[in-house]
Length: 224
Ligand SMILES: NC(=O)c1ccc[n+]([C@@H]2O[C@H](COP(=O)([O-])OP(=O)(O)OC[C@H]3O[C@@H](n4cnc5c(N)ncnc54)[C@H](O)[C@@H]3O)[C@@H](O)[C@H]2O)c1
Image (cartoon, rainbow, N blue to C red):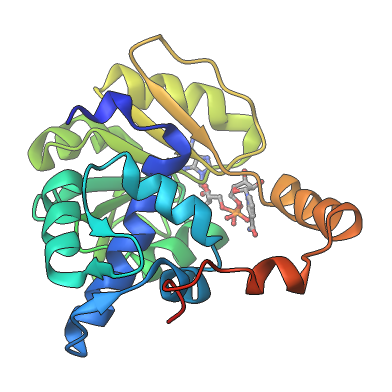
């Protein structure tokens, strides 16, 4: 099956399923229903069934999904065995926190280097990750074959920093700055705006409160 056919919203949820299935596998669970997945991940069961339907025949209705099979399927699909090296630019408050986190929950992403212009930070390590001067960006990116960068610099320097890292070969940017950045068409930019996320949550709570009845309305045979 080609990945292009899967909607972006579904593709975004696949790593969540993968992580949870890994946990189930670790405790020896063989089967899981969409209702159980729904409880654990707070995604409604209909959405889960729809997501999995894009992946092909993965389970029988009312019988749940085979954990091993689903895990293997998602591993291949997401190429979880392949490690993608990532760099982080701007080792300040947020950058330091992200370096410390280093996406341990996802085994396939690893921050290999941080970059900063502050001479007090360059040459040091944060949680074992070396911090380099921006002047070495090209060289270090090349060394680790990195195509993805996390951007946590001040908004005022976000565009020139973006230009610099794109010129050096970065093709994907996770932008934590509030700046809306311009990139060439071959570069993919994802913006993470915590203020917007928080405001959206508050809006949804106000206007679409979660209906307990809806959550309990699982089809027979899917209850876990
Ligand atoms: N702190 C948060 O909770 C938070 C949350 C959401 C978004 N943000 C955004 O993330 C960004 C970073 O926030 P912060 O609080 O960590 O700021 P910060 O000032 O603590 O850190 C910024 C870091 O970037 C470095 N830097 C400055 N110019 C640079 C350049 N040209 N190249 C490389 N590094 C450079 C600085 O030396 C510093 O270490 C900001 O754009 C902020 O708006 C922060």
